Image (cartoon, rainbow, N blue to C red):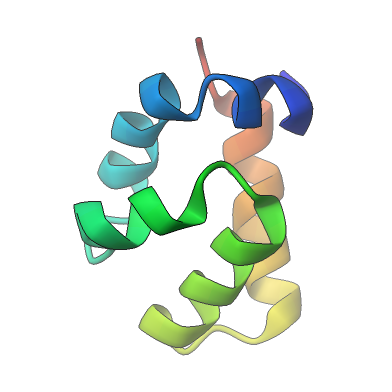
Length: 67
C-alpha cells in the first residue's frame, strides 16, 4: 500500500499504527492525520529515533499495512 492510500484511510489505519507504536497516544495519532512526515517526527520525539530509523520504521509500516 502506498502512503497516499494510508493517508486517505488514516482513521482505519490508525489502529494498526497504535499496535506497532504503542507509546503513541490516540491524541498524537489524531494529530498525525495520515501525514508521513508528522509520523516520522512523532517517532523521533517519542522513541528518540534518529531520522533514518524513524523513516525505516514508517517504510516498514507502509509495506505491511493492510486496509
